[in-house]
Image (tube, rainbow, N blue to C red; front, side):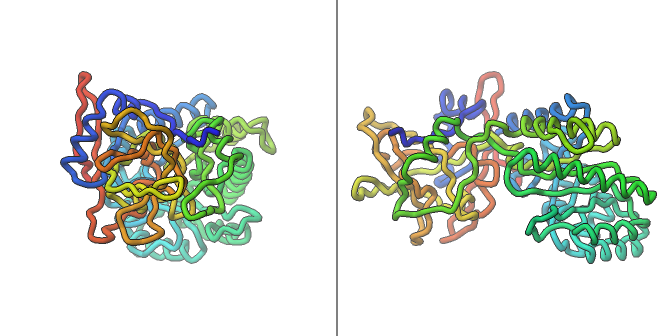
Length: 437
């Protein structure tokens, strides 16, 4: 039985591993520890894909990069240079986006129970403010009166029938609309868990109804925000189906309650196309409903804009043989693969690099971090490596830019944070620089 789960490789990952892999060895020697590689081109291509999906459907749309997906300075810089907005949820994220050159008008401020300082900055800078609760609207109105400003507001809706702690319920929305005379209400938004297309289209259509209700009260609402949750297709369908049907084989018998859907036949910009082409109440498709009601679409992809935009490199520090499998220890920690945060596993196989003799047969092994914690495993699953790893080999986790490489990283054991390196090609020559976070 094939137990592999290889990650998909696209440019420029393929080019780096196939043609310029020596750069990884040079960086590993220079850095002396784990590091991350970033590529700008896939990000730019994903942005263009989302814009094209909306344009092809005849829908006016704005794309905001969800900054929490990756802290690197590269992404807000690319947003500033391409006119993409940024979704921020703290004063630090707001300040770094402005420093990167993103216009305040292109920032949407999200998150629950925002601090007064974050509300103040959003108000004074003219950012779009997502209101999550009635008391947050109260505080925004108080600050608006104090500073003589009109806040730009988007009401976050609590999905009907959900147990989400976010957003306003229908009675709260009705009450809030009556208090919006002092704000510029731009529209309504939501965020759904999971990666299903139909529920997003259906809820977006409901929010169009709220836009019309607001207009009936004399408010100039014109936007619906469908949030994020756009799937990423990490592995092919055949390997993913094979993983789901075979017995699990994890170190120490570890079990997980569920996994991210690492294969999705409809992902990224194609998922937006599918949402816009879904039939909804009142129109043959959501796109036709938005056009007919003159409603703009907003969305905040994070992971989906970072598909194929980065990878993580660690060096093997030791290999321990156990009954029927091995334990590989690398020079980093599981904090660099943040799926552990969700009590889950980042499943795509890492790539083993190194000068080694001919393959000596499958060598299943889990991957542990260089700490004294039993729970510090980057990969609990026994990866079927083509040979036994050796000290000094490099282990490369692919497609880690989205929510993996820096969400949880800390200086545990006084280990330095893994640096980020931006790689590009000029005239067929590979170049690199430090990320400027």
